[in-house]
Amino acid sequence: MSLVASQTEPQPNNESVDLGNMAEVSQIPRITISAFWESDQVRQTLETAASDRRMSKAHVGVQSGGIPAAAEFYSSAPTPNLIIVESGLQGDGLLAELNRLADVCDSSTNVVVIGHHNDIAMYRQLISCGVAEYLVAPVKMADVMKAVTDIFCDDAKGPLGKMIAFIGAKGGCGSSTICHNVAWAISSSFSNEVVLADLDLPYGTANINLDQDPAQGIAEAVFSPDRVDEILLDRLLAKCAEHLSLLAAPSSLERTYDFEENAFNHVLEIAQKGVPNVLVDLPHSWNGWTRQVLAAADEVIITAAPELANLRNAKNLVDTIGDIRPNDGKPRLILNQVGVPKRPEIGVSDFSAALDVEPIAVIPFEPALFGTASNNGQMISEANAKDPIAEAFVSIAQVITGRAELKAEKKSPLGFLKKFRRSKSE
Image 1 (cartoon, one colour):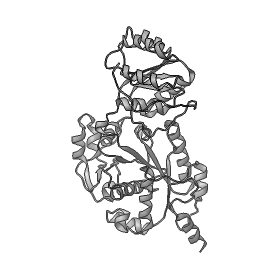
Image 2 (cartoon, helix red, strand yellow):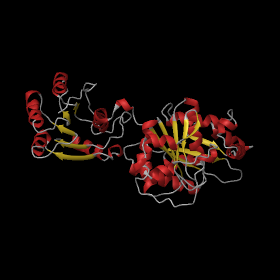
Image 3 (cartoon, helix red, strand yellow):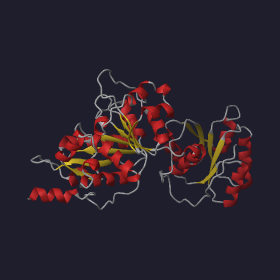
Image 4 (spheres, helix red, strand yellow):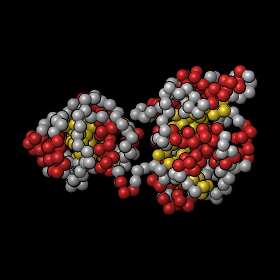
């Protein structure tokens, strides 16, 4: 067992199986983990953690028997990167069992112990003996995954950047425009580095909206994944502003773009290692790779217009994304193009009630502003920095980057709903 000391000491935990706070949990690298449980609560927590999207790269095995089963199993098998064991023992009894396990462990194997005694002296003794972490049952999923994160995620390289995926409930609802403007808002308002990845390879508009004409982009990376590293990716990025870089789509029909499920994983992971924010503009399509990108994202933003087809599609997206991301919060919702003259619309409150998702923004229909910005290759804040919609994009950026949280009691986060009601009544 290797010595990997913990920075925290155990605290009482009276909750049953719970996800806990996942904010400090990172994507787990490609490692092998074996877990041996004794109680049903710990078994359920370990199995839930093993199925979480952040564990998708790791190979995880969960079985019964505690420390004795682990020692017996690895007496004739090579040990994995990490062994998680549960034990109800304490003191000399626990140390004796761990010594038997240590006799069959490789020196590079880390061990996490889940115990049932909140004993600080025992905790310190275990750490001094080479145990990587000691957790007190009942444990939450976040406790287990945070321990794995602390052991295997390299702090010297910094945490992975946050990946935020934007998808429209229907073609033409403005998801790409919102994605591009939010990327601009994060980079310009917060001086945070942002990579905007346009994954709509045949019809992407990020290069037009940002007035760029790069010779290379996302296609070169995804068609040659074995060549992609930080250096090549840096060459493929087009610099749009001081803190904003674009991984542009070719916007060409010269070839077809049929990809396997994991085609974009490597490229996006490398991008995440280099910047704190990666915004992904997804096309309005449904296939294996779009589903995979949505599953891997830290945040999912659904843009919809307030009409029936958008509502149906948004409902399907919310439900499906919930199924593939069971341990994450619901997708964020942005209602766009609200207040189109003479168009019957579903009210904001009715739309959000049907999805059980409160919109983080309600964007009015302003064709002159958006059309002018698009034709000039500008963002909204460049076309008119004082317009309330420009402020809206900053507010969206604050919410999705964690700089501000949406308050549940607010029905119109950006204050547009009253404006629409007033204009319709006049």
